Amino acid sequence: MGYEENKIEGRNAVLEAFRSGKTIDKLFVLDGCQDGPIKSITREARKGDTIINYVNKERLDQISETGKHQGVIAISAAYDYAEVDDILANAEKKGEAPFIIILDGIEDPHNLGAIIRTANQAGAHGIIIPKRRAVGLTPTVARTSAGAINYTPVAKVTNITQTIKDLKDKGMWFVCADMDGTPMYDLNLTGSIGLVIGNEGDGVSKLVKENCDMIATIPMKGDIDSLNASVATGVLAYEIVRQRLSK
Image (cartoon, rainbow, N blue to C red; front, top):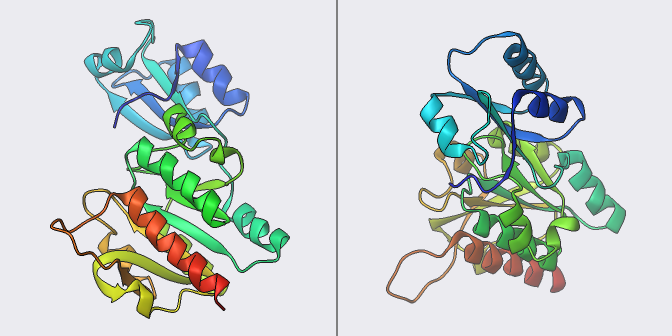
């Protein structure tokens, strides 16, 4: 995954970014550097959901665009994240049963952007992504979404499995995409539904899959056995739309 996100370099700039309330996805700090300014920065980072990575000077130099990082580089989100409750409120405001797309480790920004665009067109009320091992709301994601990022809230959570459990307690059902499931046409995908799409390479993780109520497979007649993550999202999202419209 490339670092095309917004980069903030230098101790004063990074500290001011945190103190101004800017959303920082990741922080890269020179390993072994524990002086006063660095401690202040890492303290601010720990107040939120920022991932702190301690790396060597060569890695910092590689990430840096200015060559003047002073031992610290912050990666800020291009857009602010929503809360899961904001997504539920979005559904309530529209008088609709919640339809949420959960992404289990999507790393390609073009896939995430395309999924946000599809989610908006399919009427999904929001998207949930994990804090770690996944792409965030980068400029590339924003561009690929073709403006949909301004209308479809994206929430970032620490634990996808726990989030699914919490939403199930609120009456939601979850279906995940997997090649070893039930054909999507044979499943009831109406009502309050969460669609879970897995990582481009490994699919939905074992623990997340175990906590889903249904496993859906997309019937395929070609010579290869899988679809791009954003395409799979589109196919399954519109089966959900079809079933909602035909109730």
